[in-house]
Image (cartoon, rainbow, N blue to C red; front, side):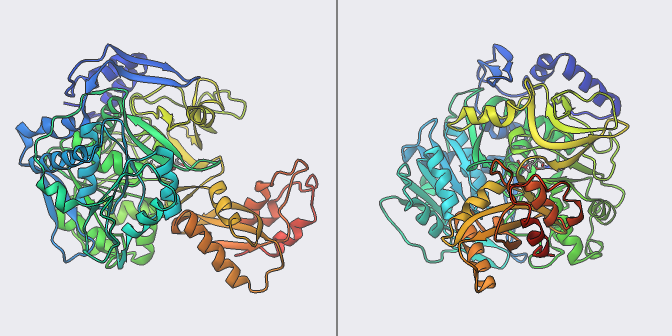
Length: 633
Ligand code: WT7
């Protein structure tokens, strides 16, 4: 069994051990899993190339560890509880035995369609059990899943399909989200029509049975194939360092990059972190509200919980549907013990009904978690008082798509909690704060750039098809460190507080959006010369998107122009990247070398027009007055 820390002394001891003897520490964890063949080398690493390999020589299949190995003891225990979009619809349950059978049937379908080890499969799916089944089916046969959040546009989906040269797309006919019923198969068709030549088949799960266009050369109904397959499928033998999945995420430049995670290290770390951060006990009901289109869904709805033999809940809907009590209703209905959500949801629910949680029995909760962005003090206290109620501590978990699992977090009931602090590193994690010159800041009460100086098992291995990008993005800024892109403080007791991104990435409702991507989309509008996008504080979303747009000609109907800008962003990325504010300008502030001075634009967007600093070095200092005068509240 994976080691579960139970006391502060054990945490301190495990931490010390993990730093002094990382290989021994992680080998001991890895021993608790089922391997077809044991590794010969626990760790090889070099942060310059970068080249990180864990458990090399080890042979395994992660689905054997998620499913088969639990069958003898937990075959009839619920693995997945699914809660539908509509509160009146019955929930569904899959036991470990049933889940294994469904995964095998789906795996056999993939094989029958010619999918082989190493092939990439793109997902564009709602939150239904079949998304979990199909992801595990890929892992079963060694295919690599690349899940795309189903809120992205056809353009964004096409970019991701092309980048990974996916052989198949798995989607649904429609996606029910709150009151909406979104025709996602149409989006997939549109994406494929944009030159996705690699796609041979589209596997479609019927959710609503609404009308869809059908191309019988490539489209296959799930119910016509998967349901007819054998429920036995031998797991593919994978090397520890074979790819498990690709997940696209935004950076400060260019298009989203495909973060690559591999089988062995990801398995060991997600299971270890899940069991410790949530202090999961047999029989508990665990619920993470994320979408499987993000890393949180991969690591802490699917892999971590199933590896730990937990009961994990999936929710199809959205927080406010049918009302602001839905989350609490679901917690009460299923007697949820561990609840994990995002600050943006907490703030939205807090605004919609301060006293709403009081109407529900939340006494089963033992741990409540937060992830995705800094949680502000007011939201932290509300969550603590109204939801945690003195018996469920908050775990403010800091991590990233690239880290694969939680790196910094309190351990509930073991380490203390402090509002807005992600607190302490998990065993195996060695965070440091650097100054701008790359010098490690010693001691406490310091603030700097958050880096990690030693690999943990689920660190990203590369960015798909472009290793150089991985190197320059994460390993080139400071030699021998992994650079997170975040700024952080360390308080007097060594707790970490994450301040936020220090690069051109903004965090909107816990979703990472690259300003460059939004600018590229806006610039596609034929009436736009150039644009600049920055973040600003937003009450619900954490950060909002503020766009400065320079048109070719004077804009006559500003509202119409703004609507067109929103439409072009929705088309190229998706509704989540729509600017909240669009300021039309005649000039953008430029340095003498022609670079946009974002610092000034950020200050104006934040409403701090009195803190612009020195603007005299600008190429066009006269634009500042216009920018200030036109600033949007
Ligand atoms: C960025 C990573 C990890 C799953 C969801 C987001 C921010 C994440 C916290 C937290 C403050 C946080 C960071 C990080 N972030 N968790 N607890 N406190 N900030 O994954 O899309 O890869 O984004 O989210 O800025 O770099 P992601």
